[in-house]
Image (cartoon, rainbow, N blue to C red; front, side, top):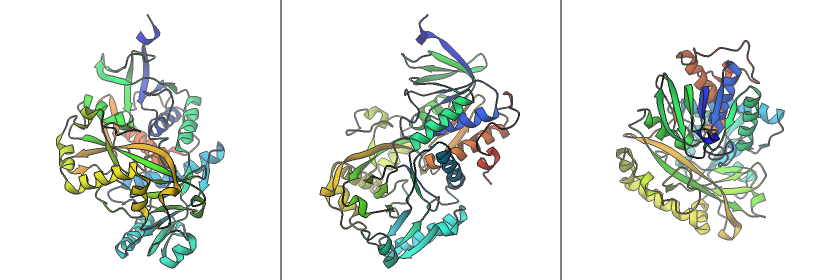
Length: 439
């Protein structure tokens, strides 16, 4: 029998080696003495959204504490964990700060609301300050605005490196990683879950007592195969950035954002970010593409995915004139430097197309939609033998250490981990109960 025909086994199988799956496997390995296997369709961890992002670690001043409660809480709790990890393992940690610039008086009302949200979400008041236009100009001479919210503690990091570091800690606790394992089916067999993989994977299938689906852009089809989240569909949006060339790049010292024009949709307007390596990039757009890994090209070659069922939630958005008008404009700024500059001239009037180089980072956001439109937060769904996290999007990387601890805590309280032997003491670098505190 060839290696690819072998069947593997595990107590807990975590599908998806992005930042959420790796962090979840880490906490499980700290708490339980059992065989934990982490699998992914790619050969390495953090191959997709966990590396293809701005690398900005935001304090949660912009997250509504009612509609984004879990994301806000996990983001605030994770800040100290990421900072400690960066110090322990010499990972990039570049204090930059963020200036959220208001171009209208109505935007100033939004920024005042952000400040209140930040306070409610636990951000120290000294880390936030509402500025008038003159004060903002003194901080960032290239920025034109009527006022701004300064978030002093925002940091530029490398979330891919953070994921790899967590992976090494999990490996030290006995977690095994098997890449090149794309899931094709999930079935119940003899009281266990059998997860099968695409041809060429190291194992034909793996049997486990519990499967945790943290597959990011690929999570919803797996949940559908278990009869879960059948009212949800997914739309994929690619965000492209342009590299800002010198000398203009160095004239801006902080991340520059503006309040979103379409707050009913889960997208940010174009912004300038300072990367952990010191480079500046500006973007993104939110171009509709057919799949979660369409990083280049038009992205609609697999149009069948775009029309996959359930169609109802998608059609409600795809026939919304405001949404479709926005989508058309987003494509233009992906292909045209001038198009991107025209979108940011209201707050960066000195930026010209000739000051932009080639494309920078490119990532895809997989947004769940249901009958009410875009799903606002991540959903955790379970059946007897499996757990599924769908719609885990921005600021997912920022909040991953705490969100994953909350997930494990919830599974523990629901009895889904009772079959596994608890370790004596905590084999973790951080306090689990603090990280998992949802309040």
